[in-house]
Length: 149
Image 1: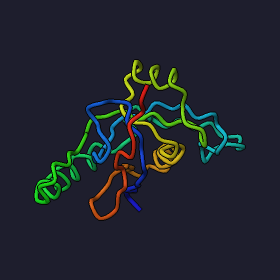
Image 2: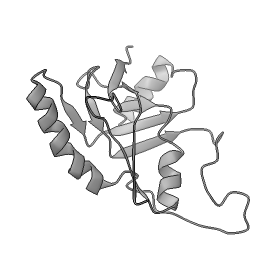
Image 3: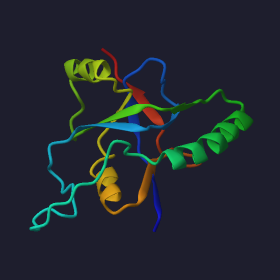
Image 4: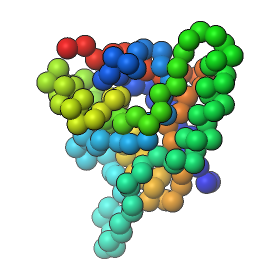
């Protein structure tokens, strides 16, 4: 396996990313609490470090952005693709408070969900390219809601 193309529902932290927008994020803010294992090396007597500065494969983002944009334009419904966005991953099942959502916006968060981690970290450790994406036939990383405050 050389790549993982994953899908997820997300909420928007920005007015300019309305519900129905398709998104290909490029950065993650990790607000998980370590409830799920986040490394293949946990519990081993081995120390391993994996670069995570660019958590999503830029190559996959560039490869998918054009075809997704063209497919959405062909449908003429005005649906947009948001790229270069930062997704906040938080522990669920509760949603964030208004104060937390405002803080995430100030930190540069654009989208929010509960499922991008630890998958992205594990893929990086395994040296597998990883990307959250969507298509029109499957609402993969489509903005499902807008956080109001």
